[in-house]
Each structure stands twice: as C-alpha cells, then as structure tokens.
Image (tube, rainbow, N blue to C red; front, side):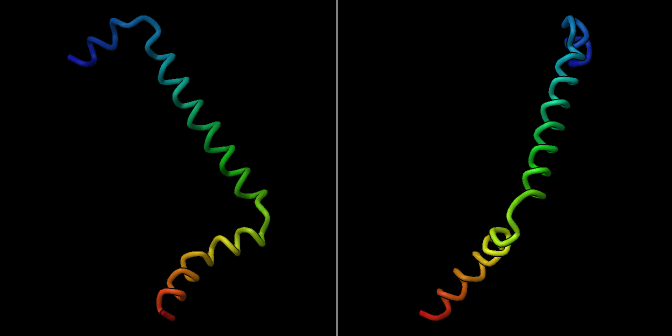
Length: 59
C-alpha cells in the first residue's frame, strides 16, 4: 500500500536525495568542527563528568 502511494507522487525520489544530502552535509560539518576544535577545550569538556562526580563525593 505504501509503495503504491509513494509511486503516485511525482518526483518522490528527489525527497530521498535531498534528505541524504542534508544528512551528509551536516555529518561532514560536525566532523570538520570536531577536528578543528581546540584541544584544550576538548580536554576540559572531557573532564566535566569527572569534576561533577568528584564534587558530589567530597560533600
């Protein structure tokens, strides 16, 4: 049923291509941002969960 309904829509394959391109471009942008991120900031962000746990245990 769904297949027949989707086949009746003109240009339905365009939606899949656009969706894939949006996902792929977003994925590439996040990857580039992560690679270019300042290493000291990454180290600080990675310690956040440990700092919170350390403060809780001290109290």
